[in-house]
Length: 138
Ligand code: 5GP
Image (cartoon, rainbow, N blue to C red; front, side, top):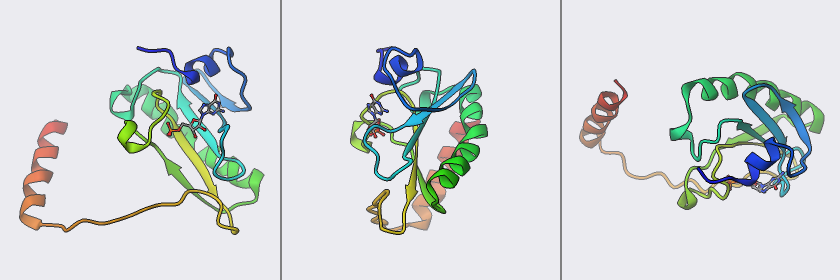
């Protein structure tokens, strides 16, 4: 496992503006914010992407993510936000330690811009695909 900038932040070797910490989770302000209050919530477990994260760490992050989001909204006076979670360089991931972005969407338009291009949905193909995904979850 390579040592990432986020592992160094958790260990206190690189400074950050911390907003939350418990035994499994750490959260701090993003250094290149898309909006005021842009926060990163990370597990202390050094998994490179979400599909590699343990159920325990995933549960720990999931348990505090809404609470941290509420605090970010209250502190920034915003009501809307996006949660962004990138996995892999092609999917815009730059730091290979799982992280969830909390990005306030402000009335002046700051925040996450989303390009959303839906593809054609084929029911017969979808039935096979859904069955395949279900099988792999058991
Ligand atoms: P990704 O594109 O991997 O989902 O996002 C990585 C995020 O980490 C970026 O938004 C970037 O600004 C943030 N980041 C990278 N290095 C540092 C750092 O040293 N300190 C802080 N606070 N944020 C960082």
